Amino acid sequence: MFQAVASAGEKAPFIFTSSSGKFPAMRGILSFGAIFLLPGALCLHAETALDAIRELPKDQALRIARIEARDGTPAPDRWYILTHDPAAESGVHEFVVSKGEVVASRGVSQFAESLTADEILAPSPLNIDSDTAAKLARAYAEANGAAITTINYELKKDAPDAAPAWTISCLDDKGNKVGVLVLTAGSGAILSHTGFAREPDPAATPKSREKTRDEPRAKPEGPAHHHGSPSPAKPPSPVQKTLQDVGRTLQKFNPF
Image (cartoon, rainbow, N blue to C red; front, side, top):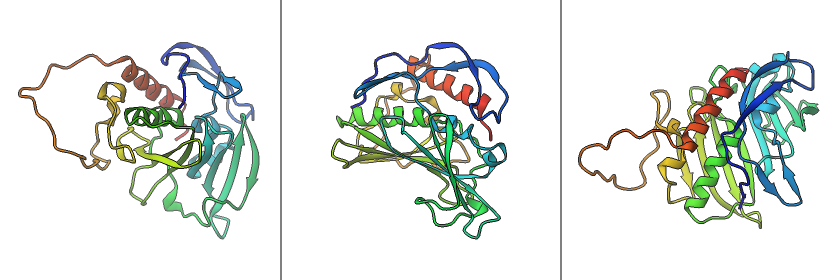
């Protein structure tokens, strides 16, 4: 299981620049997530999906139709970003981003044979980055006593009018699928948690799990329990505050 060795939510001044030189430098405050102890190395910075998006040519950000990654621990070595190319017969163009640069650009992909304009994610917001999605998946795994070794990531729309959603597949050390968490990339609403019968403590999950009018509501997995009059509102927990800070920060840098 992933082991956190530093608490989330710490802030420090940070100057954002793109190594590709396609975006101007921006100064701001970023929330640092948990630092994970990986086998053989200490990972001080993990490249997220939105980090990878910023390395694409500027005109491609609004054509993204799908994002894939495999074997994350929790961050993957490579992000596969598929864009819709109207000039290609298949409509597919794939960029591979690793360590802050585009290492491949090609007209074929193992993840999709064809793409249409209806599959483009924009203009829907991508407020939930891959690291936040991974933390939520880990919370579900811990609530169910499951050990995760690697994570596979998939971000796409299941229908033209659907909200973009993350599918986070959690695998054990033998490569067997432990569970799958599906959540919207806009608000973080949990759509399903296959293989994870128990939900984590609500205090450990983001307030953004509350469903919006534009997103489907997940079906309850058991009877609701009522305890008389509603309890008074509680201040957000440290985890909730951290995830709210992450959402606000990502909105600043979101190319969509």
